Length: 89
Image (cartoon, rainbow, N blue to C red; front, side):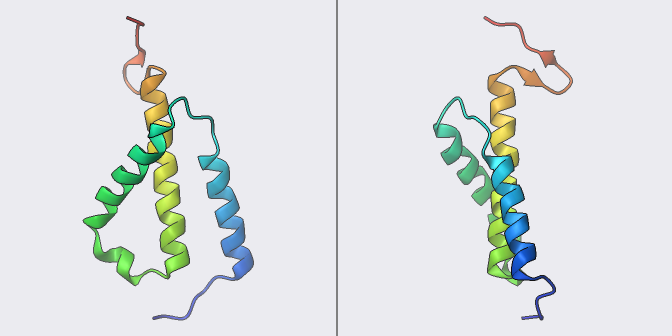
């Protein structure tokens, strides 16, 4: 494995940033599981994860999950790009 070009302080700062992104309110606790599964499905098709140091891989996974969590919240709240706010039924 290649020498790491980041410090523990760098990693800690990046983890804190991702945790802030993931800490938003969730209307449905099932979102966590859906985001985890979607991230696992996405990442399982790409072998590049094998070459990353484990702490960086974990960080990237959590960041991708944050994106999925926000997308789920946006869809649930009717905020869909190109469609504006969807009418309530």
